[in-house]
Amino acid sequence: MDLIRILLVDDHQVVREGVRRMLEIEPDMRVVGEAAGGEEGLTMLETLEPDIVITDVKMPGMDGVEFTRRAKALFPDCNVLMLTLYDEFLSTALEAGAVGYLRKDLQREELVGAVRSVLEGRSPVHVTLERDQLTHITSGAQRGPQISEREQAVLRLLASGVTTREVGLQLDYSESTVKRTIRGVFEKMGVRNRSEAVAEAIKRGLI
Image (tube, rainbow, N blue to C red; front, top):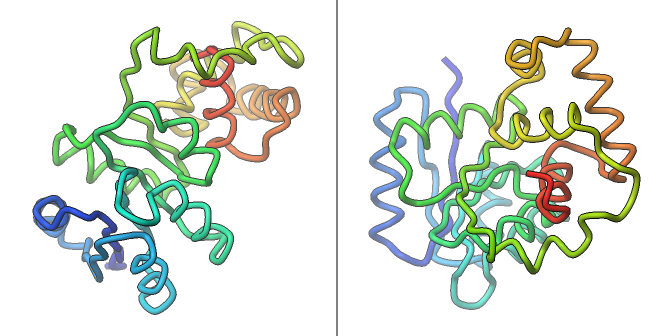
């Protein structure tokens, strides 16, 4: 059994301890380190080489977004999953390179599922934004080539973290059609991967 190595970066010790307990119930998950801030997290990231980093957004000194940006610059293959109380940093976090964005009020099963989905190449997003919270990031909604209804449907499912095959099953499309649609979305939006596509879709008010 391959062990999933996890690094926690959060300035609240009680949060780190709670997340550790939730994850280490799983026999294949191990928290290999805990950092109280971004600077410490970067140092530990280099020495511990975890499979995934779970970080908060708001922290003293280097916040989670800046930590993610620097971590991805130093270690491009690093998987950073945001776990936070704040909805409003979703787009910024995904643009910085986070592979997912979750609320701290999620259930243990959701957190465990999110960790597994990240390592399977998916990008879990669990966020409930009110319409007025989206106002400041939807100003670019009409820019660029128009996104079709099919493409929007695919984007919504990508944001929920499902696989290409699952998108096809839910929308009754062949897997090749889904892949072709995703490539088209990437080209229209000028993005390189699913996380960037989800971030851009939120900016445009598409999902």
